[in-house]
Image (cartoon, rainbow over all chains, first blue to last red):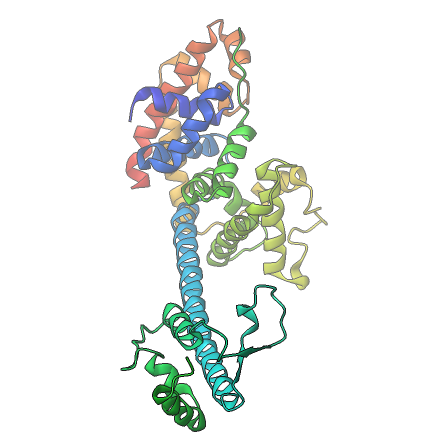
Length: 190
Length: 196
């Protein structure tokens, strides 16, 4: 560290440094251990000359505060990570639940030739379920649903043999739906 | 053209700005600057040195947490001082809320300062360290060339600005700045072993 920098530091603590030199120097105090050491020593000298010394204990403060804040920040990011993991798990469970509901709705209306499409599929954004006639509907609803589940799957589920629905989704469905699913694979609605 | 200079409070403000932007090292610089004063202040309320150290640590941690909301309406040390007094008062509890006999107004920094020497409850180890540090610094000051010694004492003890020191010493401001720096460097070298 150069004498010039330390002389600037000395002037800074006296409030005698030109503005344009301040910002960079203040940044450097945080980044240079040598500069921080001089900053500490210069202030200690001033405190001693003005009879403001508290004693050796005060010298423990900076490392103790640094350690406590580092621990606190680490704890915070650990907590945030845990929250993220729980959020992912909850999102996964919600997706599986939706898949089960959608599957059961589709199969329970197959005999009437109608299915419920989720409101999200409606471009108008209306939240009420919309009746769709699957015979006249060219869009592959089941394939869309499978793709959606694959894209939002936090556990990396793979498609089942038919490639239509993730195996995990089938496992999460109630038995009635599983049976319906089996019927679906032999007689796809589209 | 005279260059506009920063004040000591401006330096704090710049450090605070950096802390607010997420630079924790800048906060360390503030702790290094004020740790002696804060512990000295807290020790006047909290007599047990270990507890005083804990309270002083808590003061800085509270300050760090609250710094995001610090808008700089007052000087950083004034703000820190209030946190320290509140933390110390909380630590001693309602029963001993008034730490100094004679009804000292704990919110008045000047009165607290006047009482400082009378209420110091230092342990022998603390006194030993403080005395050794003081003696080393005083010896180093005594050994300085007269113009360096005079410059640093006018600055640190009398609190004169560089301009005022330049007038008193009949030297250019640049020379004063250089003398004060060289004086600090020489004394800093002498206390280095005590800080390691």
